[in-house]
Length: 351
Image (cartoon, rainbow, N blue to C red; front, side):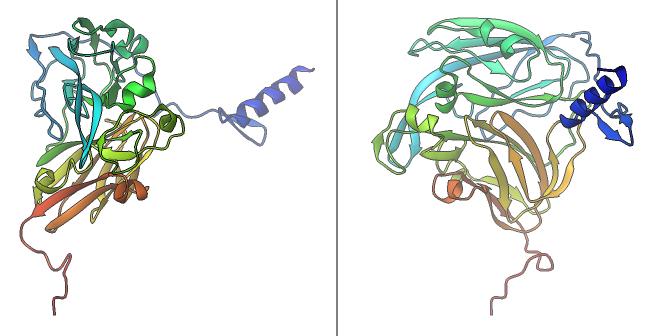
């Protein structure tokens, strides 16, 4: 084959897989102006502090310091039987005793010393894979932890963003499906813009031996998980976790930031708030937000940040807009907005 024919074959091959575009015989290489891969450096570490851990849907307060520090995280695996729906109990495996696990908040450049303890009453080993970690397994191999033991490793939070963490012990899907997931936020050096409320919402699906609403203790069904046919799809670990007196709250005119994750293990979430439009949607911190979004996709093992201002009072409904999951399997939550009516924005003819 001649050099000319050989180069032409390479061009067509690269073009076919999207690496280059071929126009009038010229090779158009994508611009690198907005796609530079940065060189990550580790900053000076000043002092140390213990991470603040709170119960979802709450999140720790924003980080106000202007320097990197050593952050010590102590997270415990707890196997516990809890309610998943009215009259239905399930044997959850958790980080911190809740599903999702504790929301972890650090700053770009922080040196994180991570302690994972597996409670002595646990039946099986566990570990953790944090998607915010640059290193083999996201920390999974370093944190293989038998019941009653503790593992420690450290990492530098190099990349700002909102990341999933989960257990990665085999069978990985079963550990995740039992509730072993959460979110870690790596704030950028300059922090996030202030808002009135920040909340933590994470979707996950559960595969029970029994059907929807079947009462009593229900164990995990590997067959349903393989078929990707969940019994329940829920926010924050149970049907009704964000409804009634546990609904999220705000007042008219206030701003809300939702840290939204999807533990999976199988399904993509079509996250939507009925009665609102997302003013900003971030698929990654530092990325340009998308504005005026009605529904955003959150992949299994992924996360996004949505922000909006609530304009009128009433109940806003958070759903997975794969809508049978919301109204029949549990992926539904509420935001209770109080305050003055604004009839020029929304009005009901009561005559």
